[in-house]
Image 1 (tube, rainbow, N blue to C red):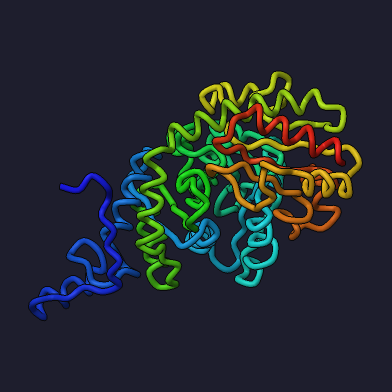
Image 2 (image 1 turned 90 degrees about the vertical axis):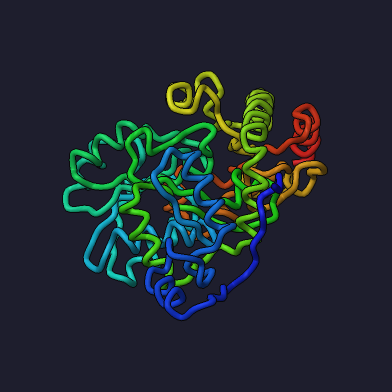
Amino acid sequence: MPVAPILDPSSTYGFSDSESFAAASEAKVGAGYVYTRWANPTIDAFKSTVADLEGAEASEAFASGMAAISSVYLTLCSQGDTAVVARQLYGGTHALTQTLLPRFGIETTLVDVDDYDAIEKSLDGAKLLYCETIGNPRIVVADLPRLAELARAADVPLVVDNTFASPMLCRPIELGAAVSIHSATKFLGGHHDLIGGVVCGSQEIVDRVADLARELGPTLSPFNAWLALRGIATLPLRVERSSRSALAVARALDEHPKVTDVCYPGLDGDPSKSLADRLLDGKGGGTLGFDVVGGRSAAARMQDALELIIPAASLGGTHSLLVHAASVTHTQLSAAELIAAGISEGFCRLSIGLEDPDDLIADLDRALEAA
């Protein structure tokens, strides 16, 4: 019996008789493996693992987090429908909702994640309410139980991108969400070597998402599913370590003269501190944000002077990564939209890896002095 998960790279499967081949092909799943776009043993192992972590009935895997998000929108919304979307979200998701979905006749209403009156009014006639557990990039924690209550009263599913929190800090479905989504590229994989996504929810919703995905084809590769399973094995240790180190780094930056407005839910006085204490097991997660005094040019000089922290666009992995939000992760937003989302010219997002926090703080000190 192997200890490590088995990697099955096959794209197709043979049958010894035509009757079972036809039956399995008609069923697509559950009657034998036919074609990896429909089902694969390694991908199934990944799906069941994440569903179990999320406390969900089922899950479906995707080639990327954006493929997972897009498939949920296209499953739950049709031409002429409206989705209510929290303004505090990833730039790629912003582009999807504001640029691509309107081509399909799907409109979105942007609201602040904590403007509950506006959310309640906007939900009338909407098809879904969408937010991130921890908003990208300003690390704003969403009050998921309250949002779930508003969504339930309007008979609208709450869809949550849980990437920043991971199932180690939050399980949105247990807090009332209908769907929980992850970019497996981030904390689940955790080693900067795969791209993937996953959608978790009830069997009924996941079946609908999977039906769409089997036709559109955003299939997670078996190898990336295998890599994600490897990453999940250390997920609790990595999340605990990165959260602890992030708090130390956030405290140091909060006292630095060349930094303003440190965003981290573990800090006393942070607007999301009480929600993090209640919903995230008292932790702030492994990602923080901060403003560099001097704006975009100073942030660029600081980034160029880093020696340990890597300027790179991702998060949730073994290495600490930094991005300047306005020029990397949120380029899809106009100047006015950046201001509305609270993203200043000097704002940087920092994902904390497994390095010693004292070394990270020293690297930031040197780089900020150069700014």
